[in-house]
Image 1: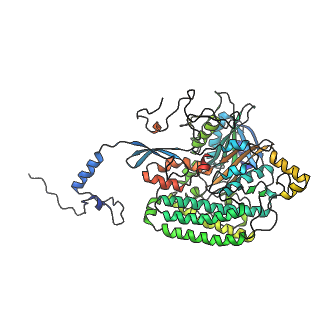
Image 2 (image 1 turned 180 degrees about the vertical axis):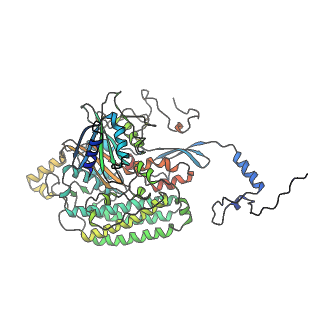
Length: 437
Length: 182
């Protein structure tokens, strides 16, 4: 008996690998392969392959911030990963223990070096909490802190987004994002005199007042930043390359994210509306009308969207603060806390003694301990200070938000493609200086 | 709000607490080490507490005091928006310098405990992967201890008296051939 002849199949079969892709270029999946192609695919499956160890970093162009990922890959798939940090460890805590409280501000600048103003504010508030002078900070100083802090947040998010998207091939976004960031830095440079490491806050207030034309200049810059952000959004949000690589990549569930200690934009991208500014309003954040954007999914795209929207909210806060800001002093009027003005130092013995004591001994903080937390660029930026009654902290611990986020990187890249490491790593905004301290 | 947390602990686990108090608005509970995991589990799971985030973990070195170290857990509850600082006192003698791990309760404990071990040398019993994280493998000592000099320098190369290192590259492939440099 002859073999039964195969009936022509009603369903289409693919005669080349290319035919298994649908018109959108995605793998169709349901389309069966023709027998010859099936044989080809089976043979490919049986090809002897071996898992191998691949080092990404520490000096990989896409691993910004010097982090090393040791990956065990099977073909393109990541089977296991070991994320190693610490290449930027500079002993922040050890150095702090030998410095006066005011001398720590420059160290704090270098933690999250894309938003140093927020670190300044966070650290100053921790010391003020220990001193018990939180309520006495002049209102103008609080408003200035909010303005410069929110501008720094915009710079932080712009850095993250433009770097992450440029790694996906959108180099234009990098240039536009940096141009927008340049506007922020020009403003902060006007205020503090430094582009990146501002050291502008002081315990009890800020170093000096805003420049005379700050208001006008800031409004002009805000309009320009908004325009550039809109341009970036137009460029990428309908771009298929961007969406394919961001949507559904690097997912993490809300429960896992909380357990890992996620805070800030990465947690809000999982749908959890935790924002220190809203939940535990500090400074004058309760005076402003702003929203906490959240997104669902916990993937790269959600993190991108949350950051984009947060920039708009930050600019809204700055605009409101510029209207509401009252005149007055910018630092507490207490010679034990504030450094005297140069005029007094040179002309009066009291001023000179106060200056000497401040520089040599530092301002004396009563013994005790405090954990103060603020909303940094990446999330909850905490400072846990143990004071022993001298002018130098006994312990100064920084709770770095991106340390805990980077801890979850292993889980987020397991099972992903090798190429997905880059956008996932870009979207969590790991800042080496803050993570490794 | 947070005072409620301390009252809850005093009601539920009075024997586990060594001391409670508050300072500048922060609530602090000092817990006996043998009850630590029990208390942390209760704080995480109880309906009134729901401390689902380990916000931070660190160690304070009180050189000259006994016990010398204080392991500090900062807990936060996202649903209830309250905080608590849990502390455990640990002695410095080699056999006693340990705390049970919290890796079974929060994922965040994994790296946080590695950092605490790296910088202070407090062991976390039961930690699945306790190795250095910020310092390099060959580093000798624990730099944030108060008796480690602030300007202490160590060579980056392996010293003959260094403890045996663990090549992190081969960690992921236990069956691969040994690539360690002896």
